[in-house]
Image (tube, rainbow, N blue to C red):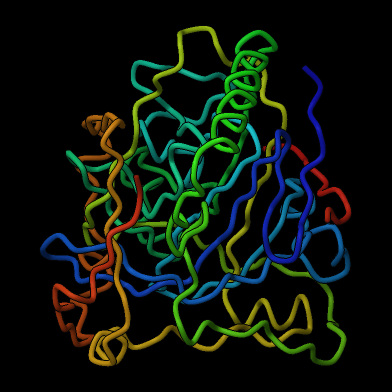
Length: 351
């Protein structure tokens, strides 16, 4: 199967098969206890690497893909949307965030190394426990704090890797027919209530971070960029759902893939000429203001068990020191229950 182009739409990635991925800024959780889903505080800006040939490092140009700015110890989650079912692999430093195994160009069910869309509406971290994940938190390579470093013993890649697989023709045709019948029944029935604030994707909370303002054109010769990867922070209640499609439903070769480079804010300014987003929001002030947290439940979904490799990953505080940012637990009324135009193609490279 031939790889198709990945594109940027605003600050979202559009992968083949109608898969949309958003990179959301969020509140960093304490590294003790288990918490509700934190809110989205606006999207990270995303830019194509190939649009900055004079300022990005050579190794980035070789890998292609996109880049986004992230602060040290800043947390993020990935929001998903799709027009048709798809299997999506998510790698952190080329370690699977679902299975803890090495990055692969093949789907595996035991252990499952992908999420199934649209059932999985978002992913806030690595699959770490029954009904929980450990939050994605940005850290530099070289300390051993990344998931990559802890699982493989080396820190070579950093960043995030995404790869999508569509359904084969027969199951896709069946899914489309079932959808057509469902729409016909819905027309005859009374209108249903809205599905909630996510609308298929998690929401940006009030006070979302605005898009960065453009500055002077970037300049200077490219040099090595501070390499960033993802470690883990606090635990939250979130399920990673088991694939309930029949074995053999997905195509064998990926339809598209993209390498997402994580860059420090100073390097972002130098490469792109744009101001990075403001520093992360203070979580105590957010909670004290009475703004919402979230809880998602899918009664028909079956949660995946964590693998030993990911279960043993330690939080970034073990490397960077204690987290002294104040924490205030949200009250029960703040936790909201949820559930039940393409741009230029992105150049892919060797990775």
